[in-house]
Length: 310
Image 1: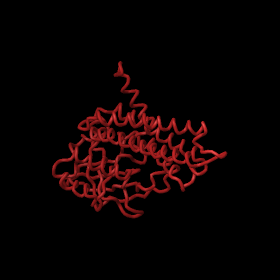
Image 2: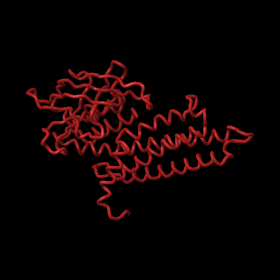
Image 3: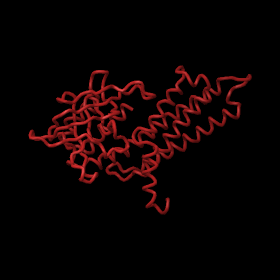
Image 4: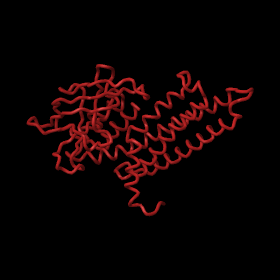
């Protein structure tokens, strides 16, 4: 998850939307790993309703912008309890409320060390994805120079939507990875573990879990590869399929991980085996990058104009 935030949400995002000077300034360190990046979109009161964000960037008399607000659930937001992450792409409102939503959001490069930019709190005790550092970030009168504006003022909504489409495919891939590992684990365990003097794999109930899980995994992986192969990364417009593949794969991944716990029984419920962590990690993928409910809403909206499915 940390690598996804760094490579896709920051590095790829800047590579597509930044100017040459910005790329030369930030991408070498991002590609070498010298500095780690993240992306700031969600806020304490605005998740799925992202266009309602309240973080603002107002032009100032220093030739730049003054950034105020809070961002929540930021992967790579901190190094430890007291240390900020290195660099971030931050979405903020640059227009008045009567401006159309599609022209109200801008994108800025913000770095550790800027006055007023601080770590609010490191978010701990997560259900899963515990290896990734998650934080609330605070912006209090942060001066952002004009050269750190990415793209045009008010032009970030398209960047945001395109990046969300790519992110959803990547999260679908993570779910497929969870499912594959879960199938491997339950298959190996069922062949080794004996009950009633025979391997678990001989019992029809266990066969059902393993066979169904394999079929679901293969269906998800096939759909994922098809969507990834046909995406046009240069522009937005892939919402229906990227929403659909994440919707299917994330539910599938959690279901297969749940099946693995059931096959392993008590051993599946403890940390000595991998599957309980896979199940915990899988839950985030039904929330992050777009909730299941937001995917369903988006898909039905897009399907209204679709009279025939190819």
